[in-house]
Image (cartoon, rainbow, N blue to C red; front, side, top):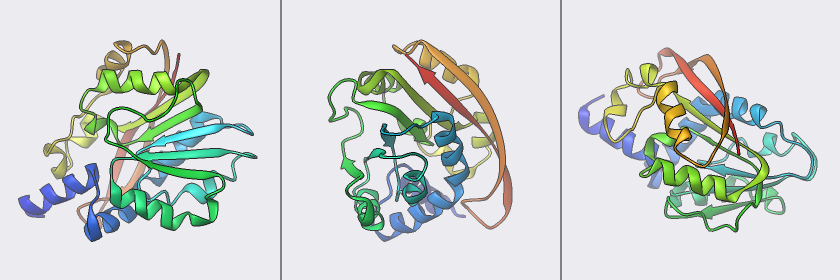
Length: 216
């Protein structure tokens, strides 16, 4: 891909917009599904819990997610108006259980200690003030709750040509240090590996990523 194309791809991975954003949202849902499912598995979701997903994309995974346990309530929050609208459209059958919130990307429009479980996949690269953002997650998570943060490791991510455009990359040590500066006290690290189709072509690449299970 040309430099201009890589920039457009990077911009739409951070904040999908318009028709191109819808197309990239579909691609992200396909390439991230393994990471998303591992994140959901790590949450150990139980009946009657209230779940927040940060950066839901088109939320094509929601249908299977809501079957994990009984009487789940889900909120997805995103900075992309395109993904907000697309997620609502794709998941209109679940509006009694799920809602989607559009926000500015820093402060959550929720009361303190609302959610039993919170998860986010491949969003940490775009957090402007990561420690403050972690503390916002801490604020809206119940004291007994679990937060799962999943990200591609620096060694893998820096080989991708689009990550030089406004991506902040982390290895496990850097992420541990970042979280230690927040209010969170405990975390468990799990490394994963999978083969996925490249976002810039049809070749298969081996992705190495980390699932962090974080508690107060």
